[in-house]
Length: 559
Image (cartoon, rainbow, N blue to C red; front, side, top):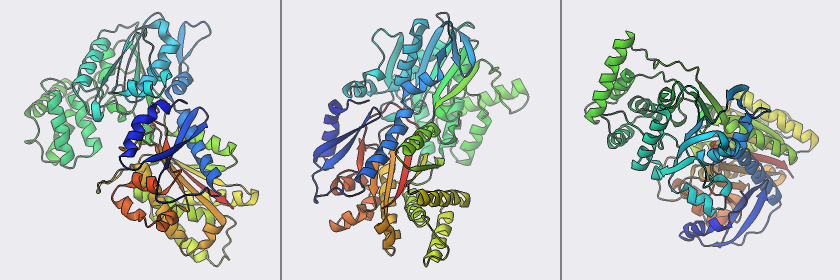
């Protein structure tokens, strides 16, 4: 993970279309090299007293990413017994006898497959994995050769789903995966590698529905107000391998699914549309969704035909609309090998090593990125005021109002009490605090600029910190406030960076140079704002080969 120089050329080409980079600063942390863009800009930024704290926050983020890299995750969860004849996963043993088959689909499975191959290659008979177009070249150019399979591996790598959309290549790979798993026998062991992006990489509609018709269905539903849950229900009922279909195809072979979760609360039925999980949805439910959206006459007729036919078949065989799939699931073991909680735990440990008092507030953060950023800006001042806070303080009424505003924003009162207790303890022992969260937010794209959800959250936080402290200069005078938000996959929106980090001086720098940060935020152009204002804000780590959503770190450090 330390060789990124060869990958910087295409990144620089991207950046140069917007702002010419001047030089890169490389900060190697725990094996992960983080590069901060330094741009030629309208100002000459000087290093401030919080620069070291900024680097500490980035170190915390890098530790989170390192903890969920594929090699580490797989090695933590698959082991051989003392004689090497049994595979042990979470205390469950599987006999090894040249009987392992491997399939996988998702953005993180290439590195996962390499780790499985390194451990079990002598027992692997055959394998096929479906990965995003261009990912092997990206890793090769970045020098991440440990993320690639050896040329003599028995696991075949097939690329597809350009722009994260199902295509002919991923469809053909899905057919090959079905052919492989459907021929397995009882003595065989199927290892299934699953990560975010797997749904687009495993498209296999049930005939007579074609891939083109399923894509048309997705577009029609999206344009007519369908949510992601409704889309997933339809996909699972019109495809062969989703909604537990892959596990059914593999029966009677034993199935071990090793899963890197990129969804809130690690819902197995949602990750890549649950190919190894029993599905409780029904074709009848799909017909009801289409009726509610008034889409029965707008979707391809083959889909209506399939859903009606399957509804009749299930009713006839079970006598009711309940559908269990008719397969015993004892042959399947689903294991979450990586998730946001693991990344947060590593971040917390690193923060403590660096001298912070850390607290993890949530691993299920969601909502609109800019609104969440506002919440963090309010939380920054609230935590700062909680250092040595006394009710007799002249600003106590302002403090109480700020607490009420945070509760209105959705922050539970018990969470705020934890923050207060942490800040008061930090005040007593003279340490800074680090508030950690994880999850995945969304962005409403209304402008024509370039940015991502993490960069938008950071700018919104900076604006709110400036607003909160405008009439309370004591906070700015006595504290460094630092906020970072970054994607563990290394990519934030259509930009080459993972996210950004700011301190409480960022908006002042914008104002000093006649840059209206709010205008850039509303135009979804935060990437260019950072390029013009700050020397060390944008974080470049390249494609990490993993994805457990995003990590946020808010530091409050008394001066």
